Image (cartoon, rainbow over all chains, first blue to last red; front, side, top):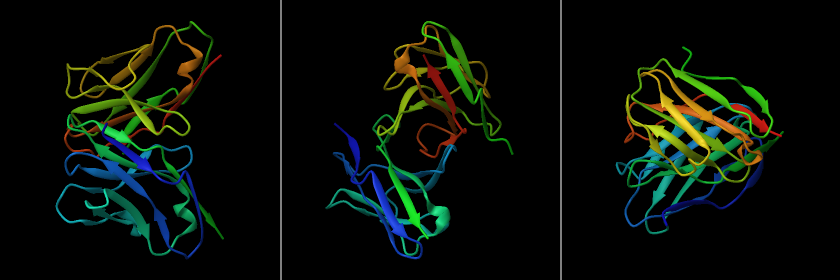
Length: 112
Length: 113
């Protein structure tokens, strides 16, 4: 089955240190992939998307993700965490009928 | 800029009661969606409407019905609520189903006792 696996349910970092949120996908082809962010009691917002143009994708708020076909990964990174980055992050893939399949989410905690 | 507006934001129902969640978007989007969010499970698609006049089942449609009233509005109805339908419901819209960029409302928290 085509799916998305987020490897960590919770990640805790100190403010100013790098962020790494891990995502692996399963697919028989190179899919369209996305990262969405959800701040507390809010709807989801698109951070970035990969649609087979460049393998390194830059998003909003300093986030970026690298598509690695050989590893079937699409990890989200940020060089320096800010308190406002505390949120839940979802890795998402588009299936063959254009529906979005969401990972289970990673909750990012940023310590002062 | 309202974006996607959902009502109500909170609702408590008793088992067997019915209710309708309303959703409206002001971005002239063609496609609209209803998702439910449960802890540890991400978002799961209930129903979607690729364009005005069409609706299709998603991953978890049982117990729900939808109506695409016009291009702006997409409602979700629970005919006989069950405790398993306790969840946070999100409406979303997009320019088209192939884009993948969805714009979400702020959610409706439903509790069924």
